[in-house]
Image 1 (tube, one colour):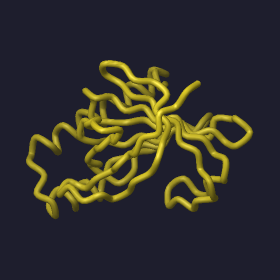
Image 2: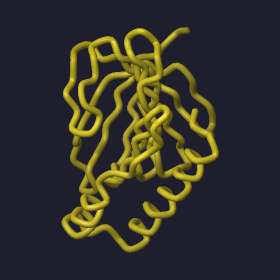
Image 3: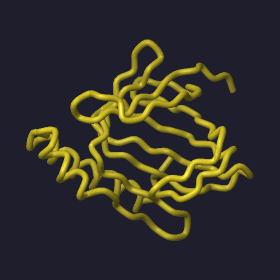
Length: 156
């Protein structure tokens, strides 16, 4: 499958880039982009533990939803986990996906269920960056929508 090389930027609410990484755009539709990312070295992640070199991430960005979903596969192809971010809807222009991360995350472990992370970060950053009440309410509604998707078995 042909990939177009793009850049993904995760931003804080004030616009500064928190994290950036390259990816290969493998699918583009009116409402969703699918990107593949490959870990070129081991990464120690606070919530996910050790992500081994060779791990592959299929990253789903809906242009009309306030979350994205990453599906991680071990180097041998086995499903590792899902990692879901509550965000503002992304933009896509000039081969760059930009989104504002609203702090809430959900990890889905095969056979072990899911856990919601970083609610305290949402509360702190809502004050620090001055999130409007509607942004906080939208984050909570998006979290509920995402949990419903997880519980119904609808993850990509």
